[in-house]
Length: 245
Image 1: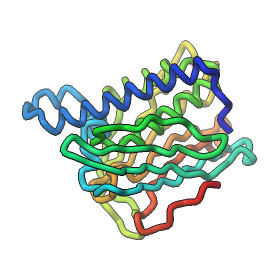
Image 2 (image 1 turned 180 degrees about the horizontal axis):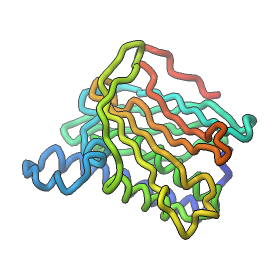
Image 3 (image 1 turned 135 degrees about the horizontal axis):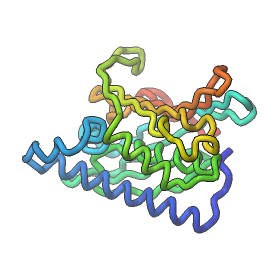
């Protein structure tokens, strides 16, 4: 269960998240209109795939994309839960889509601002926002630190591989982005404990609506048995929208 934030903490986190939303929208728009390919090379392949791609281009509004969210803890199964994330796209124009995000439910629900003129899929940023906020709570560290390390890793050390994955019983072509942003941490290594091994996987595909098939963050246990896992997976569009637990 995610512990409640203080009012100041909520304000800081929501402000950072809003900046991310605006940045992603602007970057996607730039990628759409800027004909100078040399500028695109200033960004890593991982960043281009995640934040400079029009994931929502083929989604016809109105539409709802539903994602299953699973949380697992190797030490305490009572804290495991299954939930859902809904991406509601209610209108579109040449500038992009209007998107409302319903992220988790009940006491786990996190406020997410609506996004105007969206081209990139906002669930990528929302997943990361939820993850770095949770890591900050667990370790007593700063969410800015975790956000910064993810940002640097996406630009400098993330790997991108071609692969296939299952979607609705069929194999689709995907690009798998992986990174370990805290692996070389030294100064706070003891305080972070197993969190230094946090491993992120983003599975992107042009063959699925919204362009994002799976987002995963996992931390292997120090004793080598099990792992803590947060995983968000796109549900097929012909499946039923998952009910609120």
